[in-house]
Image 1 (cartoon, rainbow, N blue to C red):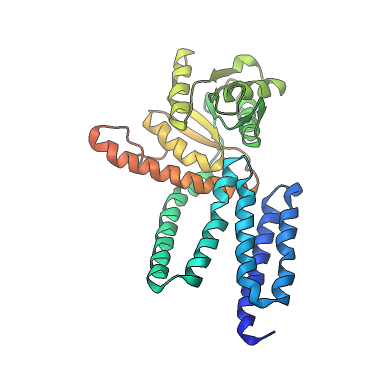
Image 2: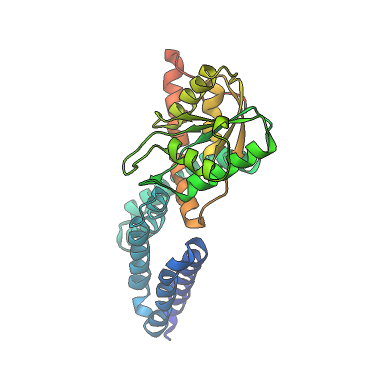
Length: 304
């Protein structure tokens, strides 16, 4: 191997190996063929080191396109990472000095903004604890036809744990009917919990909401209509969602304990944490603009 290609080849092999390992451990087992295909690209890199750049670039674009093909939005956001790395490779390989500096500055700023949002998200997720709240609001997730997604199953299971631990607690199943869903998310959760032996009398269905804020607003109304007190509740959602849901619940006058449901596949979760960072920044920015107008205060609120 010629010396000028040695460092490039080592970097290329390392990048391909890291990408292959990420896919192997990050996806469901029956999708691991993708990891093997990426790993197989190491051989031509070793044989033809001058092809390293093109092979790594093709692997990243192919990985991004494959993730985008999944119907779950978490994979769509996860696909942005290989696409972004591929774009940066092209810029730093062929771009002029000014463009490279601009790309470097933009990347650094994006990372700072990402970390600023992820810090409270991760802190809330890692500190989610048990609760003895009399009402547990279960935030909906995707339904495929009439079948619950893995996220919805995990959230329903976590709600069932709360009901078992607190025999007098009531679950508020919250979620409307979205595109591609034949029934509402609330009804889907209700069917699932009933199949697991949960008494129908311990469930309130809220099937109008289409957003997290509506989930919490309409769930609060459902509790009040049932004669309950919504001032203290528990919220069941995925780990990445608990921070934003907690801030909104506080803004609505509810003291909320976050209950973390089981996580999905790592690649999916990476995508959802990326998406949630954007949602958190949207929440913060909307608070800054709404505050002078007397809007709901979300950001500078005490933790629930």
